[in-house]
Length: 461
Image 1 (tube, rainbow, N blue to C red):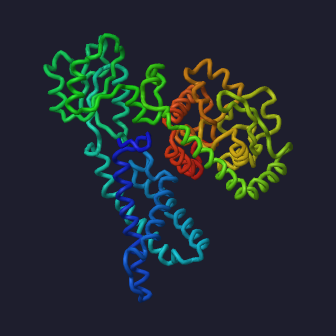
Image 2: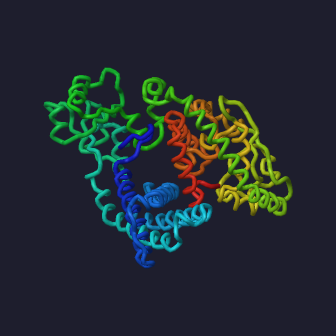
Image 3: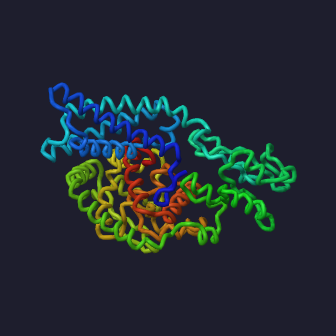
């Protein structure tokens, strides 16, 4: 994987994205030349059309990231990828048409956009048909040797079996575990020279997956492997990189202390984040005020009670604040006390069901962002009644409150809505990844992927 601004991007995704970038430039240039030929115009030099080409490519790539074109499902299914490509390119063309209208119609011709859309669809789908088969093989995956043959190694093998995995396990070495779970593991005692074994297998990374590391670390072997230029990683960090979450089953306080993350450069990032929050919340409130007003009226007409409701949530450093949302449930929804929403929840009103699916009920939270109680991106703010129990049952739960809560977040775009303790645990793993690896780049990625969640109704309840 390539690490960009502390976030890991699989080699296959990076390669596919770079090819898409080139193809979009070619498609845009083709459309320009075709339309110029129809009108009998001279094509002119590249410098004359570079700005619209860059704008076209940038908007299209942004739309593709936003709707999940580079997600795991899209990478392993051409049909799935093609459907999302059609949506992304359509949204991109609409955005460019609006931009062209704002700029006075001098940058993009509608006919050129039409030709560019057709050429882009054909080129990008063909790219996935041709390159997709290559990306599905081990040629683009890192070759990993696992030291260990216990349950952790079994988890790595399960991870390796995913079609979108960015690595392939070429072998397991049993480090004298009493009860090996991975039957094909070769015992360390059967390998005369582990460094030579690594070289013979063409290994690019060794992962230490011992169940018990006390007095069991093969330090000499690891030192020789490391000095030979092979990357050595331990289980928890490997899982964080490959899954985008912190593995609560294996981490301990020392891992948080000594692993990479919690950058000291956050003062600048936090300042930039706050400036973005203020500007974006003002813009969002201005643009969506008619939508909020319309659905406030519909909520009032649909059921008895106020259009908006306030609810206590836990924010930065565990401080409580009031969140404002459009009411989507009956006023007696929590007459028996606080409880999580469930699938097909009978407490949800007819209008409430719709505004939850498209996230319109979340729009008034932009006010909380504007006054600084929330951010656009961060862990979902939970209710005090739930937080108290979760902090008792889930280790490191309090650490998610070290950043401001958000309207959207890493957990929301990666994990579907859930109301069980196991769901809360999985969401905490994603939240801790965000708290540990926060950068403006990750925020932008989450905001773009939120559109995917809204479009495909992922996670809404």
